[in-house]
Image 1 (tube, rainbow, N blue to C red):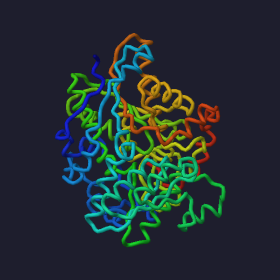
Image 2 (image 1 turned 90 degrees about the vertical axis):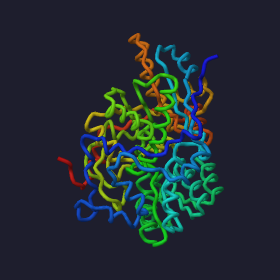
Image 3 (image 1 turned 135 degrees about the horizontal axis):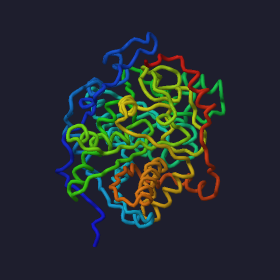
Length: 454
């Protein structure tokens, strides 16, 4: 009998998070003040985040201790299983060996609780009563609602309007864990009201939802803001995924040639890939790490590397990143994630330095990949996860064409059990191929008035 599932014991949950900044040959450029455009220090983040998270955001220490209470909550679902995808290999008739790390076993059904739990923990330590956030596909909002409920903190979620309408059960999940959920843009904030006055029919964007959540945190002393991707401390927390995966691959005497993960803001990709990049830095390995994004929001493959705001209104610090412009509003194809206009600072620098790669797939290709995976492996993947699957399939097909065997590992970051509307639309033929034109991208980038990076 083939051993499909590679597991670790509860005692093998990592005790530290890995900070890739310590190993990067070129450190990320500093954030800038949104008004003065001058570099800012940690104190500028104090209105939004608790001090321990700010310290993690700026630390250059290679390892950061995971609090025992956080590890104890992690043990509800961690370590997560790693599988050998024999069914997918057979379906593709490829000589490649394909593995996937499955994060859909968490209470929220995705990798997001890996950071929502420590974020809620550090906020609780500082006596914070309320946390605000945004969510696109609903996975992050669900994860933060779960974590806030555990620590008895009020949770307020601004959910991109298209997702709010298409994913009612994600909203119900958040409500079940006690969160208040608003369709964004909303009438609850000044930022939301301004955007609605300009375009009452807007379907929303993550940038808009961030503006609303940040405004609420910045104007209430007992409230902080939490972000589910992009920032350094978020990527730090997610490295528990890759650390487990390294141990699991070692357990079966194998190591990937290629590591792949979907890409929205960077937490998913960073979580799996960064610990493998550490092996490149520390042990001289040559593991290819590929970030997989949608052609409908291709900041890594078609964006520009420059300073930009993390939100639409321009309330956040300016970050050096690959971006499509903070005014970018994704096409309302379906209520999936990975639709954020910018890429995280660390990932952007790694891509600029050619230490990682990026690929993009259209919305039809990724659903085809998701269905192929579901029919060969049994798990229905979240639409976000299908991007990583599409890249894995493309690399496996290259192995077949070239007659060579490589080991491929990808992050199956969540299940699609609450995403049936997207699959229903796909099977009904209501999802059509979409790709941004150069004119659309250039027009969005041309609106930037932020500092260029020389």
